[in-house]
Length: 356
Image (tube, rainbow, N blue to C red; front, top):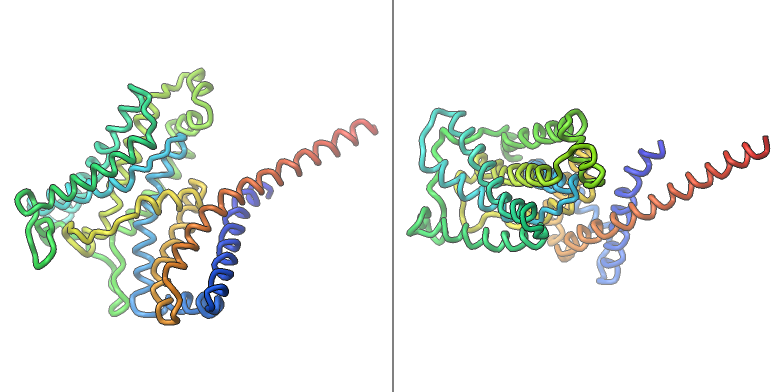
C-alpha cells in the first residue's frame, strides 16, 4: 500500500498543485478559472478533439518510452527531438522512393525509421563509452545538427520537391500507408497508435521479465555493483542508447504513415522535449507514462478552446511546466514522508522489543 501511495500520490499532488497555480494566474489576469477549465473539458466532445487527443497520446507515448529507456540506465537522452526528426526525413525519403506490396512497404518504412533513429543516437553513445562525453551535451548538439540535416535533405535540389509554398519529400505511395479507424466527422485514429501500445507492452516485458531489463536497471542504480556482478556497463550504455534512439525514430510514424504521407517544413517540433516531461511524470512506468501522455495530449488539444473565452492559450504551457516542476518536488516530499514513517515504525518495533 505504501509503495502504491509513493507512486500515485506525487503525480496527483503535482497535477492538483499545477491546476491551483494556473487558477491563481487566471484570477490575477482577470479570467474565471472554473470557466476556463470547464471550456477545456467540454472541448473533448467538439469536432475531432477526442480523436486528436488519442492520436497525440500515441505519439507522446512513443517519445516518452524512448526517454524512459535512457532514464532506466541513468542516461539523459535529450536527443529524442533530433532522432525522430532525422528518422522521419530518412524514412519518408525511402518510403517515397520505393514501391512494395502493401504491408511490406509500411514495414520497411517503420524499420528504416527505427534504424535511422538508432544510428543517430549511436554517435553520442559511442562518444560516451569511448571518451566519456556527457550524453546531455552531445545529444543537445546532435539536435541542432538534426535540424540542419533535415532542412538540407528536403531541399528541392536534394530529395525534396516544392508544392505551393511548402517543400516536402516525395509522397509515399498508397502501398506504404497504414489505414486508421475512421469515426466519420470526428476524425480518424491513426493505425499506428496500436504500435505505441505494443511498444509499451514490450517495454514492460523487457524491464520486468528479461535478464537484459534486470541488468539495465541494475546498471542504472549502481554501475559498480553491476560490474561486480559481471555486467558490462559500457555495453549496457551502448545498447540502451541505441534502443532509445530506435524507439525515438518511430515517433513520427503514426502521422507520416497515417495522415501526411510525406515530411514537410510544417512537421511538428518539440515532441522529444515533451517526452522528457511525460517520462518524468510517469516515473518511467509504462502505465504511468500512458496516463501522463494522455494528460499532455488533453492539455494540448483542449487548450485550443481557451481562445473562445478570451483566455490566453499559453496558460496550457504554464500548466505543463508547473506539472513538471511540481512532480519533482512532490516525489521528494512523499519520499521523505515515507522515510519518516518507516523510521517511526522501526522505532516503535524496537521499543516493543526493549519493553519485552
